[in-house]
Every structure is written in C-alpha cells, then in structure tokens.
Length: 295
Image (tube, rainbow, N blue to C red; front, side):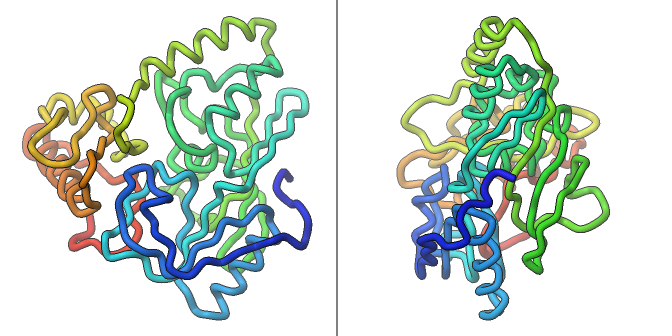
C-alpha cells in the first residue's frame, strides 16, 4: 500500500490552524487542532491522540470540496494532502489519497492506461474524487474503482474491495489511505492525452477566483448542473459568491466572501430548484463546523 512510509516521522499537530489556508474557497475560521500525516503510522498516531483527548475528527483532502464555518471547527481536522505516491502494476494503478486527480490521470496515460480522461479538470485529490464519486462526461470514479484502503474510527486498517458511497450500508471509512483503480491498457496514449486536455478545457474555471468541487449530487431526474442552470441561478447576483456560468454545480467566491454567504447561496439554490423544478438536491459539499441550519 502506497503511504505506509517509516514508522517514525516528523508529525506535527498544530493547535489553532487558520482553515482559510486549506479551503479552495479561502473562507472559514480556526480549527482547534490540525494535522497532515505522511503515512499510515502517522494516521494511526493521530487517531489515537484524538481518542485520548475525546476529540471529534474531521477528514479533508485538497480542500476543494469543503465549506468551513466562519466560527471555526472544534476538534481535529486531518488533511490527507501529504499521503502521496503511486505504483502501477499491469492495469492496476494505486495512488496515495493525497495525489491530485490530475497527477493520477497523467501518470496513467504515461503508462498507456486510459479510462480517466473524461473526468480531467475536476479539482482536488483522488481520495476526494472517490469519496464523492466524481463524474463528468459520462464517466465516474466508480467505473474504474478496484479497492480502497482506509482506517476506521478505531484506527484499524481495512480494505474495501468494492465502491462505497454514503447511501450504502456497512462501515463508513473514516480516513482513506489509498485508492486502487483498474484501467484499460491502450497503445493510443497520445490520443488519450489530447482527450484529457480537451476535457480540462471543458471544465474551465476562470482564474483568480476561489472555487469548489461539485456542490450537489446529481439526481435521477436531472444533473444538478442542469437543474441550477434551468432555474436561472448561474452568474453574479450581487453577493460575493455565484454558481459558475461555466460549471453551474460549482461555486466561485470573490475577495471578501465569507462561508456564511456561500452557505446562504447554497440554501437559495436548493430552495429555488425545489420551487421551480420540483427537484430536491442533496448536498455533496462537506460542511465543517457549525452552520445555522442543516441543509
């Protein structure tokens, strides 16, 4: 498994971390404790500390799929951003949870493996993509998922040999360590790289703005992005945040924006889609800390 690493490392647990530095929105308050483990032994030590101190544990990846309360986050925030490394054996690619989706796609193509190009351009880590089953252009992580290695709340390591999402019964992984994907060998890697870059262009996010991954899950009736567009919710609406005209199921935040403003925009979007289209959108974005209402 990728990020086993050394049993000893320079693990630092920070008290009072400004979460603006770890969220793509660049909003939010202070986490009571924060840690970035580099291997599975670090992860076990951190969870043991959290258990000893009776702390709530919150796990994040690259920060593109979270909204942090302006009031901060009580407990311990664990980022998997430094759980790096990739190995390839035949058609199997195993990536540490902190590897970016873009790096994973590029490494696969370098080794003549295809099957991920369609989701190129989605921001964040491979673990984050697996956690929300990132999808675009008719392809999702679930289509190529082989297994995941994770720690449960007791700090025990397990392997899940099938795709899991929140709707499935059974133990929910607390901290993803590595993701294994079964891809398709191909001699046409050059064409795959061109496809990948084309999909990156389709997922264009304007520069110099803070952004998110997908806000809502797709529904059986309609994709969330289509619902938001049809409901007329895209574009600037007088606040510091907007549903993107380019990717409606993503929010762009402008300088001076707060998490509360983003949260209110999400509530407004969900209410408008329900009233205009009769569709209930469920939240895909992870909320950290206290918000006034539960979406």
